[in-house]
Amino acid sequence: MKNFFKKNKITILYILTFVSLISFINTIRKGLLNGCDFQWQPSVLFWQGINHYEKFINNGKADFLCQGGEYSHLFHVILYPYTLFEWEIARILWLMTNVLFCFLIVYLICKKYKFSRYKSILLLLIFITCSPTRMAINYGQQSLFVLFFLILPFIYKSNFFSFLSGFSSIKYSTGYIIYFDYLVKKEFKKFLLATIPYMMGWIIYFFYTSSNPIINFFEPLDWALNYVDYKRDADVYSLMKIYFFDSSQFYIKYFSIILIFGLNIFFLIKINKLSDNFLKMSLILICPLIFFPHSNYDYVLLFPLACYSLLNFDNLLNKINFYFVIYFFFFNKLIKHLLDIDKIYQPLLLTSIILLTLINIKYNAKNI
Image (tube, rainbow, N blue to C red; front, side, top):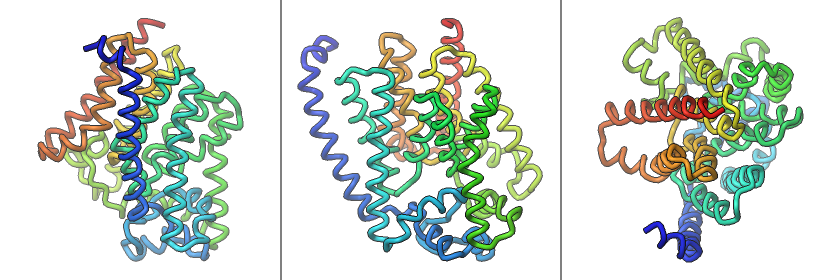
C-alpha cells in the first residue's frame, strides 16, 4: 500500500485537487448565502457613533442575526471599509478576505519552513477542505483572521510583526495566547508593541462614541462573559462551569478564569523550553483550544501542528500528530453528531488534546 501511494502520488494529488476544488467552490457558495457571524452590524453601529456594547447590554441581546459584537473594540474599528456597503455586499467582501487569509496562512508557513511543492499543495488542499476552515468561511467567522496574525511573530522576528500580532486580540478566547507567550518569554518590548493595536482600538472607540473610557474598556468582557451564552463543553473553562461552579456567582467565575490562566502559563513555560520554533508555535496555538470556549471553526489553530508533523513525518509521534489533526479536521463533527453523547465525547476530546500536547512536550524535551 505504501509503495502504491509513492508510485501514484502525482495522480492521487490530481484527484485530490479536483475533489478539493469542488468542495471549496461549494464552501464559497454557502458563504455567499450565509456569513451571519461577520460583525458588520455592530461595526455599523459604532461608526454611527453608537456604543454597541452598552446598547446590547441594556437590551440583553444583539440586534441583527448572530452578530453579538462580543469582540474587542479594535475589530469594530478596522471593519470600517466593510460598513460602507450594504449587508449583502459586505458579507461577500468578508468572504473574499477570509479566502485570502486561508491561502496566505498556508503560503507563509510553507515558505518559511521550506516545504516541497508536493507537500505545500497537499497542505493547501487539506486546509481549504477541512471542516473548521469551511465553517469559518461559511459563517463569516474570524478564526482565520486570528490565526494569520498569531503566526506572524513566529515566522518573522521583528518589532513590526510583534506589533501586527496584536491584531489577534480581536477575539478574546484565542488571541490572548500571544500576550501570555510574550510574558512567559520575558519579551516585554514585544508584549507592549502587541498591546498598541488593542489600545488604539479602545481609544478610538470611546472617543468616537463619547463613552466613559474606564467603563468602555471593560464592556466587551462584561458583554461576552455575562450576557452572551456560550454553550461549550470541550475546554477546561466550560467543563468547570458545567460541573464545578455556579456561573451566576461573579467571584467564582473570575477566580476560575485566573486559575485557568495559571494552568495555561504552566503549559507555556514547558513549551518554551523546547528548541524547535516551529513545534513551539504549533503547541502554543493549541492552548486556547484546551482552556477556553471555542467552536469547531477555531480548530484551524491545529493547522500549524499538521504542517510541522507532515514536515517531520518519519517520526512516529508526528505521524500520530498528523492523523490526530486530520481526525479533528474531517471526522470530529461527523462522529460528534453520530454518537450524540456530548457529556462523554467532549471531555474525552479535551483529554486527548491535553495528553497529546503533554506527550509532545515531554518527548521533544528529551531531544533538545
